[in-house]
Image (spheres, rainbow, N blue to C red):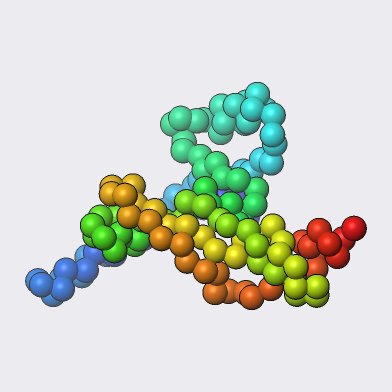
Length: 139
């Protein structure tokens, strides 16, 4: 197996009842690196032909609010401009065993880059943190 890239673009125009589909494919590079040493990261980037070949840099923790997906689909409810996303996670989700607050996020703050609108939204995917994330249960 060798790295292969496939990109598909679909454009739908409901007014004109037109669907345009485009596809491009070809060999690609792949690689990943988990390092805190910036010099090692720079060397890796140069080895991957950066900036001619673009890279994605993200935090290690998937709960980190700097990991942003679906930006284009997030329109601000106040001004309708794109760029409305999670900017902060607020801890306090109770432990599933002892029910004490943990550092696991319970709510997230959403903010707009175009206007001052923001709101806090409670987490809906879980009600309790796992015991392994509880400081009290892991003393």
